[in-house]
Image 1 (cartoon, rainbow, N blue to C red):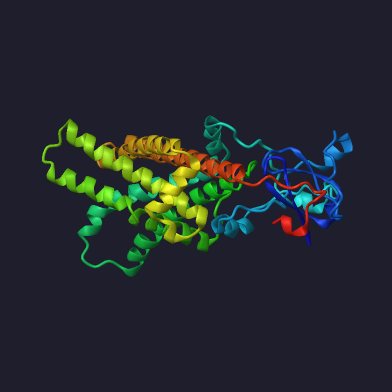
Image 2 (spheres, rainbow, N blue to C red):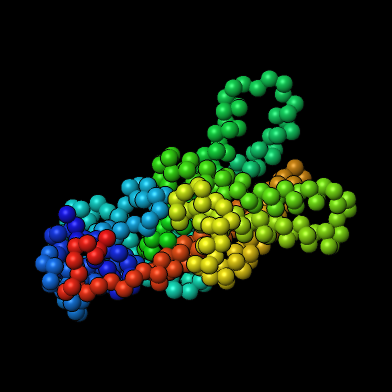
Length: 363
């Protein structure tokens, strides 16, 4: 049985009975927090200044924090390593088996999230290289592939499986970034690992969210581009506006589906409810992020169009475009997740004092 309590920052925490009456570290704000005693009328330990021996014992965030109410993050929780704040095992076997992790403070301002892609540089760089190789090879091979009348079955398998795994892993990674931020986690980066179920669910969520509304704006922009003849400045302005609205709608729909973990939440009503909860400034921020994303997309398309002419420079430009694009999406999904976390904390009722709390008052 575990002890459930609140941190002063509003984070739900959970600790083992062995830690009753002791002190630990909140994984959300990094502050000392006292674990309540097993007696319902006894207050939690006051987080007084720690002795050097206690500081050596408590050096990592606790793994007993309750995850955010979204099953994508909960499903991924078993894939990742978690640190330990158990003061009864300083430097023991369990502590040595866990990966060392810096205790970072939760971001308070949007510009602090710009550093988050650097913590996930290995994932961002690896996925950027994979997308570069996949998109470049497909563009180079499509003309020759069309001249072949009969293709072996393994070629068709590669053509379907490689994009599915690559783009699915990208979607899964971004969903993990969103779920980790929505849970108020800091100090480490979640990633899908080898959880194929998480990858498939994330890719399905992205597809459903696109078909639930943004596809209308994308189809309208494509139709207008086909029938506009030689586009003028005003025509390009209309196409860009449709693209911005569609991309922003897509991002907000993804967040709405992730918060409720229900594909049926991919509708305008849930998106409007999300905007009211996060604030209308979220719309402007999402439109700005969509504008940057479209600019990066145009850079990638330009590099793909020049692959047959300028081979080396086009490959370098393509890799740079994917790298910047993934870093930008990682930053913005981290920011959106933190906004969701802050809105949930602000809407949380004030926790009752441990002197009058009953077992039914804590979740």
